Structure formats: C-alpha cells, structure tokens
Length: 175
Ligand SMILES: O=P(O)(O)OC[C@H]1O[C@H](OP(=O)(O)OP(=O)(O)O)[C@H](O)[C@@H]1O
Ligand code: HPA
Ligand SMILES: [Mg+2]
Image (cartoon, rainbow, N blue to C red; front, side):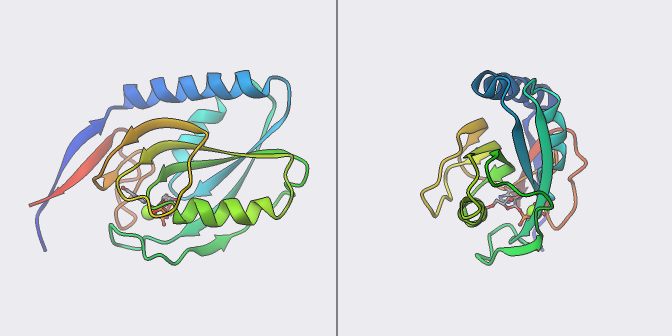
C-alpha cells in the first residue's frame, strides 16, 4: 500500500465564505417561494446543514442516500440507491444538494429520477465541482468551489468512510 499524505486545499474559512455566497444567491433567486432541499447522503450532511442556515427563503429538507465509490477513489459506475425520499416532490421547487460532482454519474442518475416525479423546478447546488473526470454532460446551477483533479477528503467527504469529520478539505497525495 502506498503511503498517503494530505495537503490542505480549501480551508474552513473559504468553505464558509462560499456557502454564505451560495445562500445569498439561492435566497435572491427564490425569494418568498418555498424550496425543498434534497441532500445526497452521506457526503452532503455538513454542507446542507450549513447551507440551509444561510438561506432566508422558506425551506424544507429531505434526504436520499446514493453510493458508488465504496473504498476506492474511482467511481464503480454503479449507483446504489440505499434510501429514498420520504416527502413527495411533485409541484415543489427542488434543489439537489451535493458535496461533490465528479464523474457526474450520481447526479445524472438522481436528476433523471427526480424529474420523473414532476417537480415545479429542479436545480442543483454542489459545494465542489470537480471538472477533470467528468464523464457525462451535467452542470450544477449553484457551485461553491471548482477544482480540476485530485481525490479530496474532509467536510463530509470520505475515503473509505473516514475523514468526514475534518473541518477543512484536503487532497490526498499517494507517494
Ligand atoms: O460524480 P460522481 O463520480 O458520481 O461522484 C460524486 C458522488 O460520489 C460521492 O458519493 P459516494 O458514493 O462516495 O457516497 P457517500 O456520499 O456516502 O460518500 C459523493 O458524495 C457524490 O455523491
Ligand atoms: O474526490 C472525492 N472525494 C470524496 N468522495 C468523492 N466522490 C467523488 N469524488 C470524490
Ligand atoms: Mg464517499
């Protein structure tokens, strides 16, 4: 097994600043209309908790759980649905909240599934938009931070379920 080191990429202050900006953009766009935030577990649990407190529009929240990475740093390409929504989304203004869009497979799969349930509107907010490994053409409407390549951990993002608790985001470097 190669030794792993980690280097800080995005500090907690930078993350907080970008989430504040995202909250303002979303609140400005929706005004007094109610939003339904759909968090994609597990990775988005910290992001959605911070984001929802920066949104002034009336908001409700629900979660799905999707998994495709397992213990590796590459997508398996197989998206497992492990938890469904509990609230109906028909006629609602829905925003999917992701920690990261990487290959785009997870988002594409969820987006198409939710669209079938006829929301009033369907948008996507991601904290991290990783561009280098995109496999499908899909874009988030609200992006916190864009980056190129590198496997990142912290602030909800895991490697084999570890490191979600780190308050900053690090890139893993294998030696
Ligand atoms: O664009 P993609 O290549 O599909 O990658 C993005 C998805 O992968 C990760 O989930 P993961 O399968 O690791 O589950 P987790 O959120 O429980 O960590 C991440 O949280 C996103 O949901
Ligand atoms: O860089 C990443 N880190 C953690 N989880 C991920 N899921 C897709 N890309 C990543
Ligand atoms: Mg993961």
